[in-house]
Length: 250
Image (cartoon, rainbow, N blue to C red; front, side, top):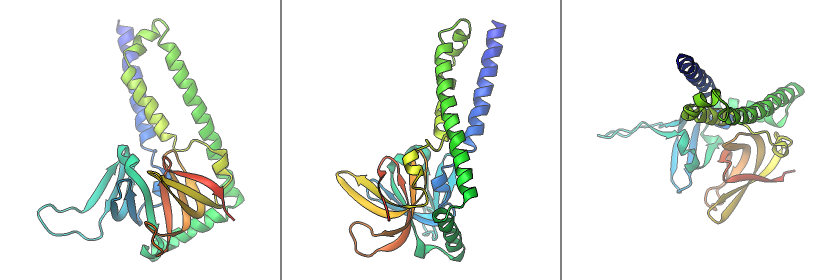
């Protein structure tokens, strides 16, 4: 009984430490590239939120440039990670960036569209280890499932379902990128992104910068809202549930 209790405690501690380690490094890369910049979030319900973006592991915050006086002062809007599914897109208008923001964006655009050997090598290494990590996760899930049927280890694991499920969800969420060979070959190149909403589709032409589990990012888009002909240069981060790269560009 004592041994079983000790094993349970050790298992819980390992799960907690692994979960904390993973969560501390699970900021979405597409969102991080917009962090510190003024952006506009377009939500699926048609509403908009504008402010300077802060990104944390548990969500994002848009800090307003100006705050209205009153009893219910609102200085920012917070979206938690479980609310990302309400997002249609994040829009970074180039003409809203200050000198520092323009310099950062120009550097990112140049690095993306003129990828050198070292940058491509680093990305390939990251994808390689990401693929290994995904494979290890599958093996871990299989092992846990098999271990629950074994005696006496199964008796311990059977009572720790909430911890095993939590750890597995954190690892899956932190994966950040499920390697996609089709998308990978077009990173840094012009693509056409098709974004669906209800029964309508919109297409945006731009340079594919990056993709993660939740989002896809393209730069240098001629963007107009709601069928308007007033086009503005912008960068977009779009929900992967809505956006798909359908065509390669020039």
